[in-house]
Length: 461
Image 1 (cartoon, one colour):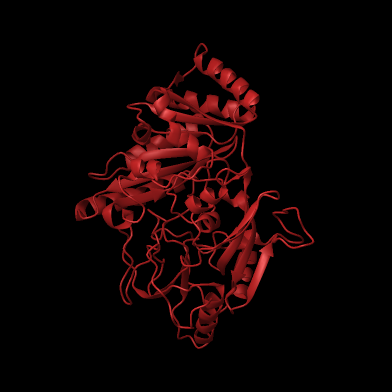
Image 2 (image 1 turned 135 degrees about the horizontal axis):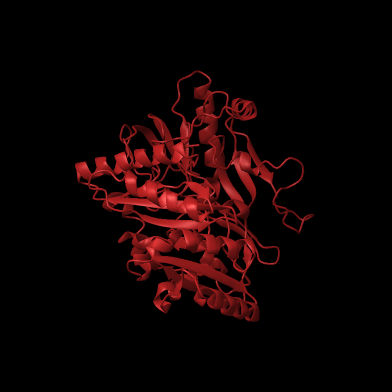
């Protein structure tokens, strides 16, 4: 049941914590933005009332634009903080229902506060699984989809089939594919013009639910760990690209630099995780072939010990929930709910060509960008396809050391400039480096039609 209009109950699950006139505490220690207030609606009906009320005030020019967040766990990019001053944070973490799961058709309908750990737990033991990410179990499924995050098996944008939306005038609507009694087969693009991705990486509506596609649970999941030396980086990447292009391995490979590889017990070498899934016989055959190629003459790879891809790694690729958040705690040293206050963390996420020379050049740009006392960052690379690979560059720093905070932010500025100069843009920016306003006529017209009065605050995209 909806609470009364204007009554909003605080949520212990959310990181969007701020009092009126104050900023949100977040791990990046970006310049603090003053927040008008934080509203925490309990259901979609309340979201409609809030948006309509904001729209009425926006028509007179006397309003605080809305900045929607799901659980707010967008660490290193601003968490729940808005880009501009004076926004009202619309914290959707109390919209936390899994409305529907259909195992046969392969979808779930979830609200913004549903975490990937919760949905994975609901699917445990079934023939379907969620495309988990490498982040905390407490992160929002819907929020990461809207960010077009990267899962362990495919980009999260591919998991999206439909969106339930509240537009800037308070209209309640849906786009994409939604289940009904006449349509038993999921059609991710719906019928007619495909509109789902007008609302991913945008700030033109509030998403109150999504249809999330689920993966068939494979008979076998095997993660093969390989390592290679720093000097072999270009050669190793080129071999992995060839294997991917020729379908020896799927486009799900992860590459960790020596700092990130420490999470998995590997010291002073680069680490590769190759995940093979499907029929047990096929996985066994692929595993033998990959092992033979990796051990062949001239190969840059060395087979890593089993602990480099332990049970927790396999569970993540198998879509199984981890209530202890083991891998996340290994990476960060703390729990999801305390990271914003206890750790300093900045993220830089560029996409580069899947070529040995390009990846080696990216490593060089990262090394030369380090400012002052900024430590060498952990870097995780996600293969997206045979042509592209993204980088997740993690800059950690002591959050209470003003000089270290300044050095980390100057490093981040240098990374943005250096990669942009070579044509490599981040696929997810932070609140201090929002993408320029779109220059395309069509995007500008869509924005003016959907939100002419600026009901929603300008986002990072």
